[in-house]
Image (cartoon, rainbow, N blue to C red):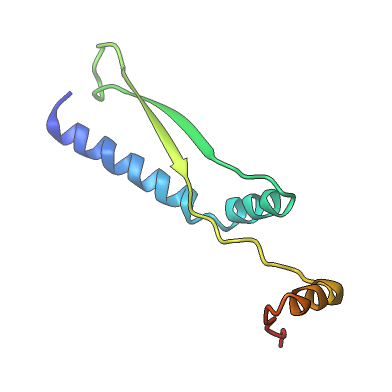
Length: 97
């Protein structure tokens, strides 16, 4: 595989990884899973085949692993009882606006 193609394949992998990491839909689902009390680690694999245009040579195949670790923390929802308990432990609780 020539160096230019390797560079382009690396760029493609980075672009896919950024798209996954920036996806609001993925972040929303991951957040809901975390709210359910689960830890999550997401690994995706993509297999990309390519061959030179007009060539009869066998296609080359590359496999990439993508790890999506970026997610916003799930919002904390406290009941009045939770706040009362924290105050009893002398832990200050910010009031929501």
